[in-house]
Image (cartoon, rainbow, N blue to C red; front, side, top):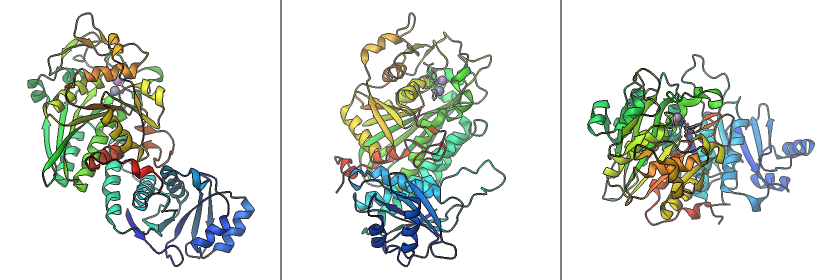
Length: 501
Ligand code: BES
Ligand code: MN
Ligand code: ZN
């Protein structure tokens, strides 16, 4: 989708759908300032419907035969209370109200309330991501018309560089959404690896794929145990981004890549929503989406490794028995007391592999626990780490994108719950504190000297209804946080981005 800047307001604008953001109170005055061509008509109509411009309020006017033919007014509430994320939300509310019309969509918002470049980037992303629709599995095109081009009206910023970031970042998010939205018979471990290699070839990343044999040679017994009950071969994916100049920081991003999680012999039954478990590769989608975005953005100073131990958790005659003991590639033995706690088994070997690269920091993203959904719902992911600096970096990176992230405790006394009678550790603790013991399990496979963080995206990977910049379905959660984290200039804080001027 084409997206551009138009510094010259709306007076002589030639597009067909106009979104105007308005604060509460003095609406007539604001419309005056915007110099809208049909201002009088709008004011009269607004009085009739008692439009107050409260946060999230929206109304739409058709002006047949005029330019623009459609005006969408979105309320921004009180200026004092406005957050950057409210502008994203206003953009998505406006974008959704535009469905049914085609042509060029323009948006006019208070660009100067926050840093204008940051605002332009946020709103550009919000518009494009709100308009996303996955039509890959339909024969007939979407019958609902959508805008074809986007214009940010009245933004006065020096460089176009900001907008050049919107396309790669959104393409990364959309790739993640498509991967997550793909049914498990289409997105198999093999297909995921092929997509990763294709991205690597297209955008200039290095790629390494390990098959089952190579993983066996490396002793990845935890990962392979999960894969052994499936007819689909496991695929261990490793992509590498190298910058043009010298490398000052090396990062690893690890994603859980279960293309389907049936639960194994601890089969998902009842309310467990087994049919949703195609989204259990959401962590890998975020990581591959971030790889696609970073490969195009080409940030300097950093090298990034993208790692996914992809497989399926299924049932057949060779599947893991509940009670099996397996050995991870660092030698630790694991009693699998629940085959449905499979993500942490695959991540164990993926994290060991990541540590062998000796990066400066590791972040893993995983749809790891239902308990995290219960704790934080579907708008906030959980963050576990012992490293305060890494926690701060990630929370700042997430906050400035509007992705919800909340730090949770990695309380070491809960490790008690993972004690096995026979093996070094068991894979499942008690129900209470289930997301914490999951994090503590992962920690066992990370070198203590390497800063590491775990992000549980079980809730945020999917939304059942349209929410903010996310249409119902896969959200692509994590891509923007990862990209932002990696692109942060070394030693600089992102915090200023969310502060008012
Ligand atoms: N993929 C699931 C976690 C999940 C559940 C994600 C619901 C999204 C929604 C994971 O593999 C799993 O099954 N976890 C178990 C762990 C339990 C057996 C300790 C869970 O959360 O029930
Ligand atoms: Mn599971
Ligand atoms: Zn799972």
